[in-house]
Length: 130
Ligand code: MN
Image (tube, rainbow, N blue to C red):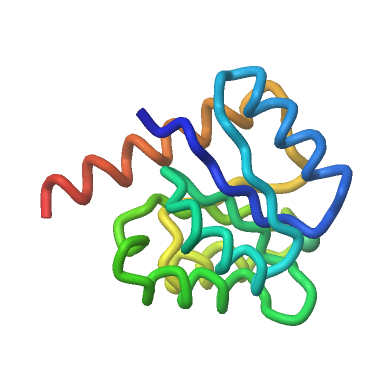
């Protein structure tokens, strides 16, 4: 099961809410606050899933996704972008950078974990098919 999730998010309130929702559903959450530390934690911990904020300081989420995909052990790990509703182009760019899907901010507590699980299932299915 995909129970260990790495959350790369610079906003403390979003991190708190996402962690609360995920832990309520039985996930173990590791957090990183920027791209560089997110890449380091991803390599060290080999999470089952990565939740990646796109608007990060210094290195943005698109660049983080590209770098994650270049790490051999993380090539098949589902990466879910968290994009701002206002930033329309972010969604397409996040997919182009290697993400498997996206969730829009603000986080909707009613749908957040369900959407993550749908994206994980679709990512697994497409990896198995190819
Ligand atoms: Mn952010």
